[in-house]
Length: 201
Image 1 (spheres, rainbow, N blue to C red):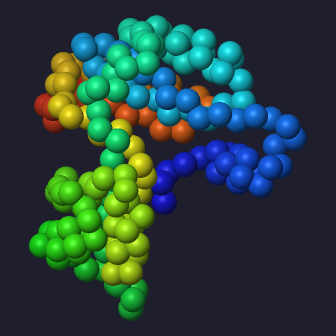
Image 2: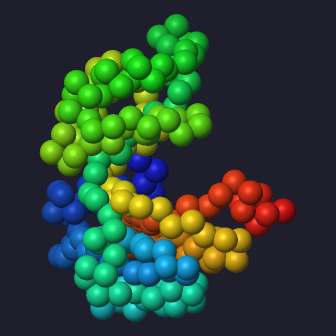
């Protein structure tokens, strides 16, 4: 439900059960700056930070950015709970129905959420970390099916990027996502539909 690779799930289960044969896994946040003043928060789970740090640093450098010191990007983000729900929801009889914004807003705010945003074919429910479990439980109790739900870093302000920078930041996101130790990547870039159409042409 949170788009996490199967290997990461199995590794996390083994870590919790103490079955990692003495491997000491640690969670680390790497911060970095990408092209055109974009900022990145990279959540890591690794058994060897001396291996992972240079690899992540290299990814930033190859894609026109640089990995920075702790705090260089974090001030641009808030740690939040994010639940993404498709507007088209399954029904008990096997059909589908349209989820109304007012319905979701009432449910989410009553459970402690901060905001509900519409984004095309999905709604985004945003909440404080302390309210995350309550909001997830309320969504489940209402019979709604999230597309994803996670604790993540949400940008306070977006940085719009042009076509050339967009190609670089998308490449950087892809390479970071592909790294085995990377659990989640958050960034503050935004790409206009016209720019997206231009780079996909």
